[in-house]
Length: 202
Image 1: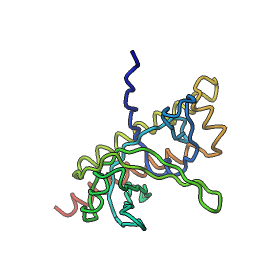
Image 2: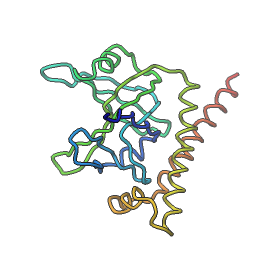
Image 3: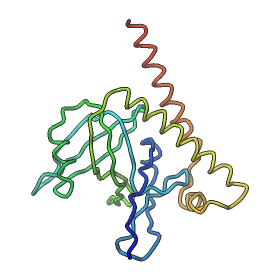
Image 4: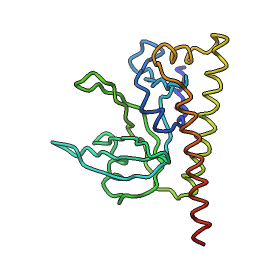
C-alpha cells in the first residue's frame, strides 16, 4: 500500500530571513517530491506560516485575476504573496480584504529569477485568515523562539558537521546568522513598545 503523504510542517519565519533565502531543492527525483526552500539558519521549508499586517493588495494579472498581497512583519520587512486561479480561496480573500488588516497565512515558498539574475522569494498562499492583534503577538513570540532555536543549532554544529541542512546553508549562503538574532530582538522589542504606548494612552 502506498504511503499517504503527510503535510509538511509550516515553518515560522520572519521576513528578513525568508527574503534572504533563495536556494530550493528536492530530496528525490520523483517529480511530485516536495520542493524545499533552504532557510539561511539551516532549516528546510516546504510550507511557511506567517502573521502580519496586510498593507496592500493589487490585481497584477493581465489576462486573468492574479492578486499580489504585501504582508509586513513587526520589523517592517515585507512578505510578498501571489494568488491566482489555482488558489481561488486565497485570491478571493485578497480581492475582498481592506488593508490594513492582521492576517495569518499558510503557504508555499516560491522562487523566481529576475532579469538581473537575482533570486526573489514569495509566498503562494494556501489559506489567508484575518486575525486579531493578540494572535499576531503570539506568532511573533513563537517565531522568535523557533528562530533562536535554529540559530543555536546552526552555531552548535560549527564544531561538528552533524546537520545536513546547516551544512547546506553554509555552502549556499554567505550570511551571518546574527542578522536573524537581531530580527528576533527587534520583533520582541516592538511588542514591548506597543505595550508601553497602550499603557501611556490609558
